Length: 331
Ligand code: ADP
Ligand code: MG
Image (tube, rainbow, N blue to C red; front, side, top):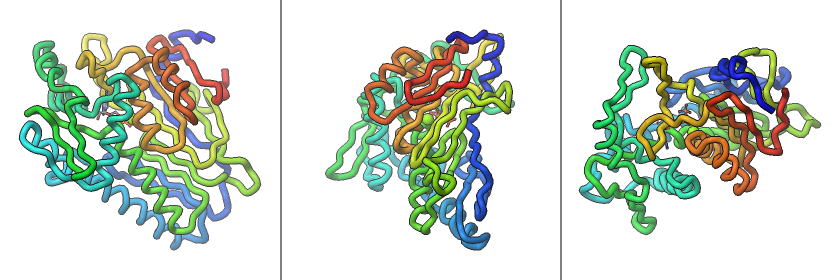
């Protein structure tokens, strides 16, 4: 079961790779949306038709970003954050639903997933050249503002209220997954039945890949050896999300600090190196991959087992790989 640490050190570069054969009429486009690399692969009649579909995907993702980004001035989410401790803010139904879904994942994970982590915003900076490690005092003070139970949701008025001044919500661990789901809806609405949308570590596969097959042949790549797959599955109409400590991080005094925070400590979660979750929709897999990253292998696996249709592969901080029954591990 156990793998040597030395080998698995390199797994921090893990990413998810797809291995479908080239299909006649398969078109691909790479671009950047929501600050993330977006890769779209669709099976369609011709280049012109493909371009139309690609544009509808980009439009849809930008629309969602405009609602759910905490950085776009005037977005409904920035209004919620600005009114923290003052008043409830009426938000569009989609934003209300995504925040509600985030609350459910918080409850399921006992607070390991918490969108009010953003109350600590500014303390940490992971951008190259801007690295910032906060003092323990700063962390302690701001951590007092992190608590999803202080987010008051009112479905009848579609309002969100952050109870305390200084609190903030950040949807970085769930909105991209939601956007991928909506993007795939746009693809399907245009009549395409075979498609993959990959936005960073969040992926949706639609259809079966090749005619007559049971689904897309999906591999989770070993970064140490690009030709080697750690796990493989056949997926149809499913979502895959990966959260890793290698996405955004800096090193200081020999320690790695990364962007997935443990809301209990205010510091990056320490038990996990990488998590891949497979499930029925991308909003769920996106949020769960972050939640399980924070929970660590044992509690993470317990949670995954309770949830129908969820498969999980997790690499702990020692490089030990554990997977749920539905994943075929390649050793
Ligand atoms: P990525 O952004 O690389 O896809 P994730 O989906 O795991 O990775 O989301 C990580 C992001 O989620 C962080 O950059 C931050 O915006 C936010 N975040 C960090 N810690 C938490 C947490 N404990 N709960 C909810 N969101 C978090
Ligand atoms: Mg996530």
